Length: 278
Image 1: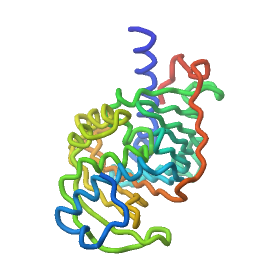
Image 2: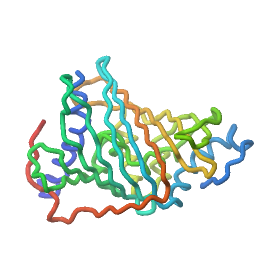
Image 3: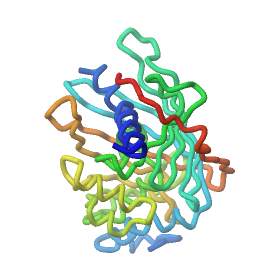
Image 4: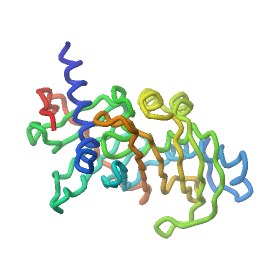
């Protein structure tokens, strides 16, 4: 096995660990969208165009939430940070849930998101504190929609490119901003074929790796067609058990235009040694 193959294998194991730690502990752009366009076939086209709208938006702050139900118990991983939609890079601080005794199980994990790659710091498992672990997200069976503990905000938007159905639910508010709520189902295979170069391969991997490539969603768009909130429901097969795990991933976007300063680690800052199992 080559050094590169070993690095990818070790990195993928660490990323999967973000999810497995929790499971083990628990047992076309649219602006000024008109109301008459929000119904019927128009709704599908509006939803499919949400990613293009974000691509034309410089940046935003984001909050993420990933809920997993297994064995009658629900656990939640939360993240917060910033994202640059033009460069498709972002930074998140991911908080793992408390252990049953109420103490924090792990230090916050810093994640850097980039096309085809996930960088993690403070992951533990024998990795030096000053080093990053790099994971090729195209090698993950879920395309890193789940195993990193947070869904890349632009990848979440690109899933909507595969919308097969969508219906207008009604006008609502998200954090005080008027939004239009749409609900439907996306096909990951279609999304992969329509996605940007940075997400296409990862979404194709997810289409094959999830229990089903059909993803129910709820998305909330503002008057400029920008995503303010999107919620996906994935069906993920955890390697430690045969039954599929229900995963709900929610991404909130706000403060559009916020400054984003993300510098990806240099080669010397990336850990290439053996990563201990957890």
